[in-house]
Image 1: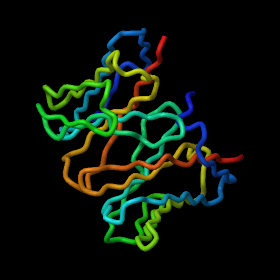
Image 2 (image 1 turned 90 degrees about the vertical axis):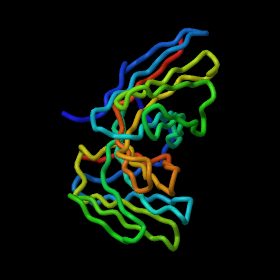
Image 3 (image 1 turned 45 degrees about the vertical axis):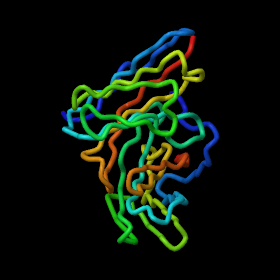
Image 4 (image 1 turned 90 degrees about the horizontal axis):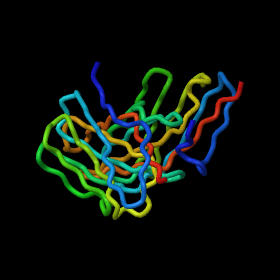
Length: 110
Length: 114
C-alpha cells in the first residue's frame, strides 16, 4: 500500500515487547492532546486522548503520559502486536487550532 | 453504521482540470475539516466549517474551494490554480468546534496528476 510518511523516524520493536512513542508539542497553552494511528493508505484512527489537567491516562494496552513542564507527550503500547504496525502521530489543540505532528513509524518484528 | 466516508479512493486530475472530492458524515457533527497529507509532514489544514453554510480558510487554502450546504456533506474542489495537487486528502469531523473536540477521520482520497 501507499506510504503516508517516507522519511519518518522509525521505531522497531520485537513482538510482545512494550513500545514507547514520543512527541514534542509546540504550544504551552494547548489543553487537549490526541494520539492517532494511521495504517498505510488509510485515514487516521483515534487511539486515546488526554487533557492538560491530567498527567496520565490509560486505555486498553495503551497509556498516554503528559509532561507539561517540557511539553512532551508519550504513547506506551503494551505487548506490541503485528497489528500495531503503523504510523503514530500526536495532535495538540489550543482553542481554534489543531496541530498534528509528522508521526513515527512503528515496525513490529516477529 | 456511523462514520465518515470519502470518495473516490483514487482520483486522477488532468492539467487545467477542476476535480471534486466528496466527504459525507452521519455522525451529526457540526464541524468538518479538510486536510492535506504529504510524505514526512504533519496534516495541514485546507478549509474548515464550524456549522452548515459557514466555512473558513485554513493554512493552505489557495487553489482549493469548499461548500457546506448540508450538515452531512463538505465537498472539496481542487482547482486548476493548485499547481501541486498530488497528495493524500483527509476529511474529518468533530461534534463541535469548541476546544477539546476529538476529530474523526475518513479513509482518505489519493489525488494524482496525469
